[in-house]
Image 1 (cartoon, rainbow, N blue to C red):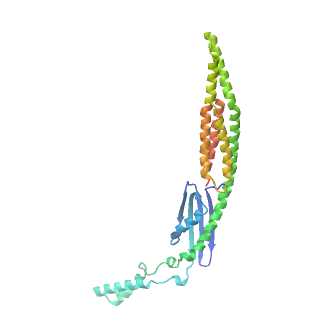
Image 2 (spheres, one colour):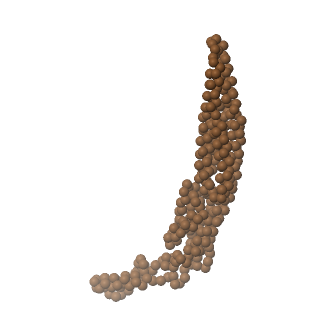
Image 3 (tube, helix red, strand yellow):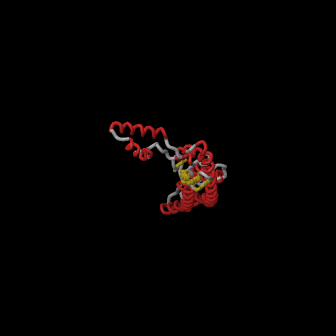
Length: 297
């Protein structure tokens, strides 16, 4: 089953105190990379996000965006008494050193409340990772499920394209197989005609065995039967790999390279204009396959 490396999925959670949404965007990448954008303190859960994503996704860049709105309860707003006492104690000491009155000290109380740590943000104090992670995990799994649906749908479309390209290459390979035996016979006829003309002009004789030897050497050098058989085998294997239960992007990428290699060898050995034209056609289709394979997980 083919899976696309691109897709989108989102999921939402709504309760009396918490509104949570997660968006996932998948992009191409040879390896798995997870990028998390989340407000504090949810950014601390990034390792957990990646663990869950790795259970489903093997390759690609996954961009995770988490949005959260929290309705705070009255008990979430608390004054840090320890910090407040420390600040006030320091102010009294300064007042005594400077000879300031108590009224001056009390006038600074409002400003003391604004100092760091006296009145913490309720978002951080009320966050409990053990309590909230199950909710976040369910939302993440819901977004992953929708992402997988889109990736599977795109994978099915790519599978149809791959089969179409495979059939195109298979048809051209069949033409090459039919054309290959004619290459040697055509070379033999051309060589025989050139030799006949040369003998007629120079009035000399040539050993017929030498002519047969020359044709045999050419036939052996231009024999592409093994390459054609391997290319046909690769085409059959390509379809088999596509039907594997796990998305086989890396295998398809490697097999495409092997088919390129066989096509190049056929083109260099055949020494025939018609076969060279067929090879160019095959390589053009393989290039389309290679571009499409980059999108397969």
